[in-house]
Each structure stands twice: as structure tokens, then as C-alpha cells.
Image 1 (cartoon, rainbow, N blue to C red):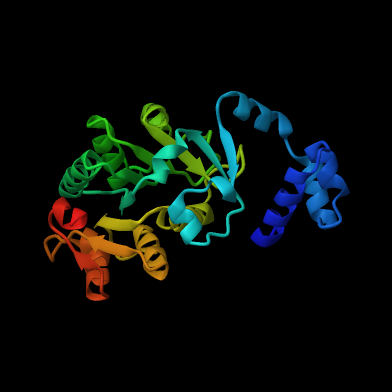
Image 2 (tube, rainbow, N blue to C red):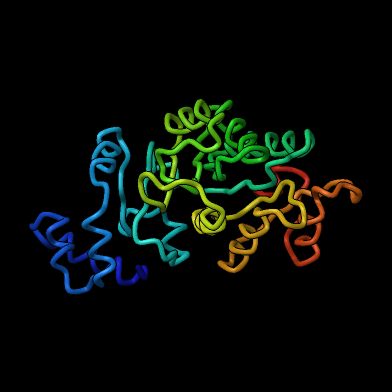
Length: 260
């Protein structure tokens, strides 16, 4: 469903005293296929999620950076403290197959920037993402993981403990419905949301075909500053990173350069 149409229906729903499902089933704005989707929706899963503390917010409660981006998502699912996204946010992104150097750099930048009061945003994945989240948490900083699945899903499974920590010291975020499984296209959509939620993006380690490059491009398209940490020119895992430096991203080798 187009975002503009979704927002219009959400506005009308907020003004209505009718049961949400009954209202949607009677709405003239829905197509027959959309009405069937409403009738077949698994509302019990949503009710359970809401009982566990998951919240649904619309445009009125979106983080400031996301509002400035005019992002097309009509609503978001949050689990944790969404207020962390109402302070300056920096995304740290990179490859899942990060080198020891890449993870160490992600930790160094996340620690310094989180200690300065920035919320560290990333995608909850292996490699650079996990290193950035953990480093922010280790210092008592705030972090948010933007997921390519329903907000209650744990992917990868080994991050169950990490996600629990993030919920306690930040939040999990998703634009996908409860129960949605991670699929390839959802990671690309997720990357655009990561960029839209952030005031700037830092690329740590990105091969030529890294999904982190889509986040960087989305950030650049939004007019956000893109920072990149370089490495040895023979390291294939940094070929994409070096390419976006040539295209105009800002090279940094210390966290204070971002804070300045």
C-alpha cells in the first residue's frame, strides 16, 4: 500500500471510534486485495507483541531525522526506549565478514561517539554492526538496531543476548510487521531506514558489493554527511570504502573528526 494512502487511512482511523478492523474492512479507500489482507491478518500475534512492550508509532512520534528525511514509512515498531532516537544519531555500518581491524575500528569510534552523547545506530548484523552496538553498550551509551524483520524476531539467532541488551539501553526498530521474516529485499529497505534515521553515516569496512554502500548512498541522497575509515589499499574488504571516498565521502581516522 502506498505510504501516502497508508497515512491517510491512519489519520482517519485515529479520528474514528470504531473497532480498527471493522473500520478498515468498511473503508472505501482499501482495494479488495487490501481488504482481504486485513481480514486474514494474524491479530493475535500483534496483541501478544503489544503485551510484551512493543509499540507502534506513526509520523507524529517519528525521530526528528526521519521526519526531515520525509521517509515513506507510515508507521514503525519499537521495542525499548525510542527516545534515544530523538537525540543526535550516527549510523555505523560495514560488512558482516569484518576483519579484526574493522571490528576494532568500529569499537573505537562507537565508544568515543557514544560517550559524547550520540546514539549509535546500526543493523544488528554480524561483524561491524555487532561491534558498534556492543562498544556503545559497554560504556553505558545508547544504541538502536534497525531490523530487516519483525521487531520481535532475532536474526541472527546468536544475537539474542545482544538484542536483549539493546532493548534495555536503547531500542530495536522495524518498519516490517510482527512475524515478518528476514528476506533479501528487506535488508535493502532496512538500509534506507538506517540512513534516514541518522544525522550522519560512518562506513567502517565495505567490500565492493557491501550492503553498507547502499546505506551510504541513501544517506548521500538525503544530504547527510558520509564518513569513511580507510585501510590498506590491498585489503579487498575496503574496496567499496575507498570507492566512496573517491566519490566525495569524507575520510576520517579519528572519532573526534566526526564530533568536530
